[in-house]
Length: 608
Image 1 (cartoon, helix red, strand yellow):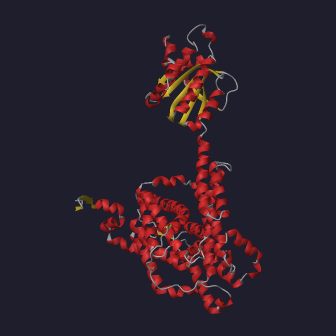
Image 2 (image 1 turned 180 degrees about the vertical axis):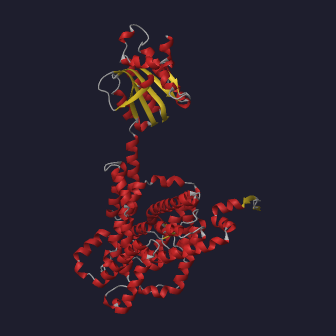
Image 3 (image 1 turned 45 degrees about the horizontal axis):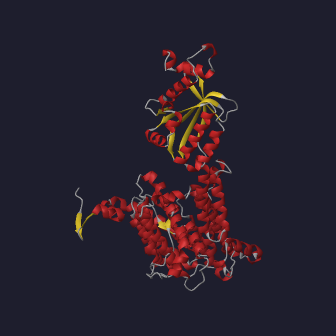
């Protein structure tokens, strides 16, 4: 098939190159008509599930539910058009909304609060586009899985606790500027102000959601849970008995509005935008890759970065808050047969149609019912299975510490972006703590069946042996040099012959080589002999540059060879010569000589 190429300003542009950066073009070109029904059904299902989520998540962000619907429209359409995943649904998510609320807590209630919010959405998008353009696709690797488990668990607790006052029908003056802990203190000290009608409706919604999940995962529990209580509101006029309703939602598409820029505002929003941009990308890429394991679609992380960034930049001009890929809606989209990115685009279109024609009915939705949806959602964020796995790996392990510290910081700190930064920093520190331990195995050769040498691994040596194999592994860099030196120093007088096996060393730096030179000198001064085996060509160059070959003698260095164990066997034969196994009274051979002679060709020929 011919590739379409045209000239523009003297530059040859390929349609394939254009499609790479605007994936919707490739989808349009190769779309099959028989897939339209599948995409429409999937989009309708996502819409039914998404509408109550969009409204509820907006409350987490501290804004009117209508902004959640706006975000569910614009972000879904643009994210699907420019992202790389065919099934990913972009829009409001609980974690992003929680981070948004944290970043905006100082500004809510101010006259320019919403302008600041839309500016932050713009900044999040710009940062994500920059990550994609400079190909920082691996930036998400710095956010460990355990940090995310801890963050989502803490976020789940915060989301649930943050909705308790709405569930109880309490109105807290100035709550937008209060932390969750301050809200909880107020609730406990004013528990007598509970509106039992509100509590009953909220609990009804929660029970309906749980029952629907047990009956079928495909049932829109949240939608049913907020629809049924509406009949009770109308029948018993509960709105006149203190039950707060969502209020009027305008029947209009998201209006275009210029983002207000200023250097002061940009500086104030940057920290929160950075944290949201990172977590948003982690969510989107993780979800896309999880679904791609079944669809076998190749996921381009950098393109998804750009797609998410464009979605947020465009959304900022239509009164939307930051968005990301939603795991629940994306999973529903895939399960219900979505075949292309058109399902995501159509889901945004369907939400827009609902907003245009059914918005007047939304005013009857009780706020405690939306609170009930969020409390169930918050509980669902606590991944109990993953937490158990991390704890089983060790309560004081690096992963466990990073998870619990991040979880606690999310709950305690007022600014959640600091909790994210702290979790990432802690993961790196704990990783470096683990990597500064030199990976060493101590092996003693012993005789097995059929004259084979068996290498017995030991933890420590209590008495001197004839031959000790020290197997170095992994990356020997300056951070591990101190530990390497300490462990080698303790072995200086524990053997007559040391075989330093280096075939499993991936890299080594000059600091670690200097540590080995000190060990060689100490062994020689103690009257011992050191042999190096399994030396790869690149490692041999470094050893020669550092003059190690002259320190121990070129005859005591054995290169890594193709034959299995060839280098080790040669080193053992060298050890045989060093121990003078072929000389003198054979009746008084040491155990080491007996073992080596059983497999050594030199023992059979009488020469080395």
